[in-house]
Structure formats: C-alpha cells, structure tokens
Amino acid sequence: MWNEFNIKTFPAETIVFRDGQYCPELSTLENKPIDKKFDLPVHIIFVGEINDNNTLNIELGADEQEVILTAKILNKKPAFLNIFIKNAGKNSKITGNIFIENLSELTYKCDTYHLSKNTDIFIKNKVWAGKNSKSVLSGTAQINKNCENCGSDLSFTAMCEQGAKIDFMPAQKISSIPKQADHSASLYEPTDAQILYLRQAGLGILEIKDVTKETFLNE
Image 1 (cartoon, rainbow, N blue to C red):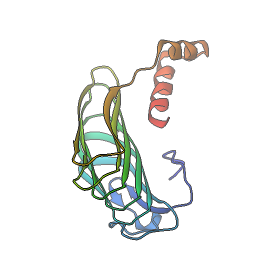
Image 2: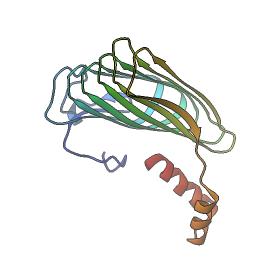
Image 3: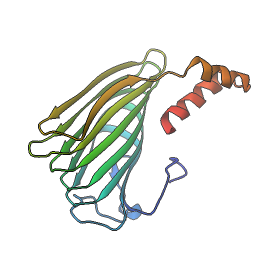
Image 4: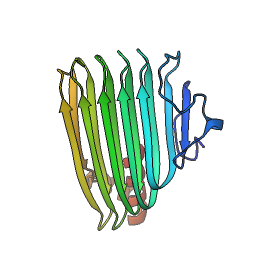
C-alpha cells in the first residue's frame, strides 16, 4: 500500500484508513482519541477514494506527543469530506499534508482546534482540480481562550485544469496570544521557466501536464 500511494514510512505507531474505512489489520493503534504518550510518533494515514459523506476526527490529549497526518485522496463523484483536528496535549504537535485529486464535485472542510497552551497544529491542504470540476474548500483555525503560546498554520493551495471552479474560505478565530498564527489560500501554476525546461527535456504537452501535476501533489 505504501508504494501504491507513494507514502514515506518511518518508525511510528499507525492508524490507517483506506477508502474512508478504518483498517485494523494495517494499524497498530485503535481508532480513538490519543490520550496516551507513546515513545514513537503517531502516523495517521488516510488514503484511497471517497464517496458521499466522509469524516475524519483526530483528537490528541497526551502531552508531548507528535502526530503526523498523511492523506492522499481521490474523488470521482459528488462528495463531502470533513476533517476535525483537536489538540489538547501541552507541548504536543500535529502536522498534516493532505493531497486531494478532485474529478467531480467536492465540499471539503478542515477545522483545527487548540484546546490547551503550547499546542501546535500545522496543516497543508493541496487540491488538484480536474477539468470542469468544482471544489469548495473551507476551514477554520481556532485557538481558544487561555491557550497561549500556540502555533497554528492552515493553508489551502489548488492547481486547476480547464473549466475547474474553486471556492476558498479559510478563517481564523484567535482568543489567546499565539506564538504563530497563519492561514492562506492560493492557486498554483507552473512558471514559464519550468515549462520551458520540460519542453527542452523533450516532453510533450500531455507529459508536461502529468509532470507538473505529480510535482504539485507530491512535493
């Protein structure tokens, strides 16, 4: 599976989802809130094709625990995807790289919540929007009261094929003084220099599209 989805593995406890379903045979931990400190990072892996309504809840309550989220998702039919990330563990950190290939209509929401002091949540969302697809991308990074010195970054980037429509709606709710609080939304396009380099390397138009798409999703 790791080769199929081009996922880098490392020593970790794992919680694995495939096609929206928890896979106990591929996981070392149960699908439940992380309220215990482990010697290794916890790697949450969410891969495959989604349909209809999909929800992923990540709840971290253990102090000084690292959690890494890797998501590589394909959408071919109208679907909803909600990811809710909560960090209540002091000096704990959640980082995520979420890659979505949307070939249809997708409503995607990613909300992050800091529920204790000294918590970090850094999430990068990338969406490749296929021809004539529609993507609604939203999310709110929330730092609650009495949760000082938190680090928060919630970003959305999209690369679009012809006729694709993108709606971005990132937001922040900051109720305590953070050490870092960022949110962003942007469109990605390969530069003229990059395209020229690929042409000089002998690639045709379709090959250049494939290369730039893979670069965007996997960088």
